[in-house]
Length: 347
Ligand code: 3PG
Ligand code: MG
Image (cartoon, rainbow, N blue to C red; front, side, top):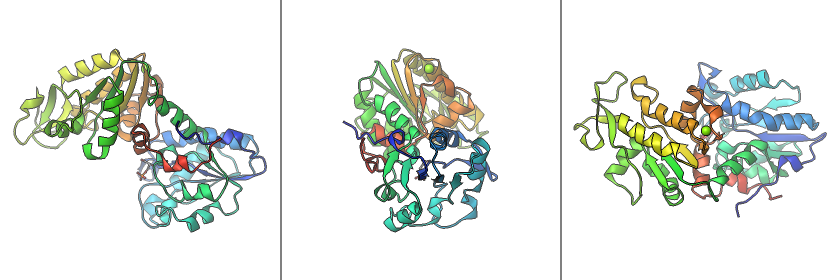
């Protein structure tokens, strides 16, 4: 049985000062929040605390990967955006937790500084739950700790994929770096009825299948170089010209993947089918996104790039659950224990 952390719903927060760890690690563009999905996802827990009469709500998060104070990663744009969505004088947002190198060292002294003056701790940072850092792990041993509403919901929705599911269970994986994702691919290979692989990952698996039973593309859009305006042509997967690169799945693969997805009872998708930031290589990712959204299946999408594709295409409300976690959702599906979850006592 998976560890079920106790819920903020069970906490007595009235008149208390609450430290909330959210994952407000959002993309910025010229000092503004470029995608506020994670900020919006943090609101239900903050609203619950406001409604239940918390005296003070101290919110903290990391932003990017700075190793010391760095104005490029100052939390201010995130703070301002949060205030524009939920303006309550009891909410205070601390500076980027990673401005202190003790954060990633999971340092207890830093956890005590974060906890200073607070009565309890709520972890709602699902996207960071796979990190054992001071604000996600150590602090849960310093204050009475509870799971926030988003963290709970993510564990529930992703957890469903680890139990009995409606079949066929079709998993779709893309993006790059097989090495980083081999654990989750093995887990999906065991649990799913079909594992469709596109993107750079398909090329990596063609060279070395790693013993996985996957469906690779039959055709790709090959480009003469890695460039948005590169000379490109559709070719069979096995006939990519020497020195060329497959930058998207081809039309035949789009159709066969879409058919597989249409017949699914359960779907999990992580990773784009090509370089979808470039319009000429976006069709494969778009076709998969549309097939997942059109399906009647229980559909879960996790991971930064596939979620971005879903949001850019305006399909998010046709997906059963769009996870705020990338690495965290993969580690959970791999069957790993997430340190940020394990540190919270069970109910
Ligand atoms: C993410 O965006 O994946 C999470 O916020 C975790 O960030 P990290 O990979 O820098 O720890
Ligand atoms: Mg759907």
